[in-house]
Length: 203
Image (cartoon, rainbow, N blue to C red; front, side, top):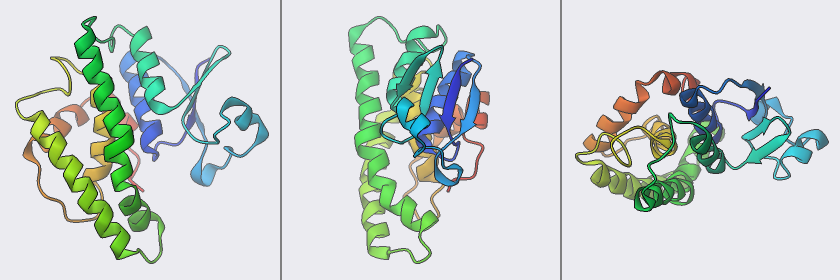
């Protein structure tokens, strides 16, 4: 039985759950991380030495790192498999890396301060929001005239960017309205897989 360890208020677990759902791959969701604990248990560390989520366990095969899980699911699923064109695949990798190294990290301080701190540090929040606005603007410009992040059909770049955009758009803070980002997000968020993966309150 395929198992996905994590919790659905984690942006990284959301990515993996959404991809598995889109691929039609059944899995057992095992709560881990945050209030659930588990991630520091020796048995879990034997699966994922980083003590983070998500972790995918499948017939003795173990995989961690959310974007690695996205790429794996795309390789085994016709529903998410990318075109053979190497440039299209490179663009998918580009946006997966950008989400993981730029957009999501930029909003991390704002998220933690606004949702997890009893007394938010406004300087940290403001700096994080400003950095995130820069990346939101980049994504908004790119999405002009596009229905999907890369190519003409839904794929794992939409999942990675969509989960990050979901968190960004649900931060309790003022943001510059980005019409292209909003239009694209609302399109992909209407998918059944998104509704299930993103259904937990942000926080």
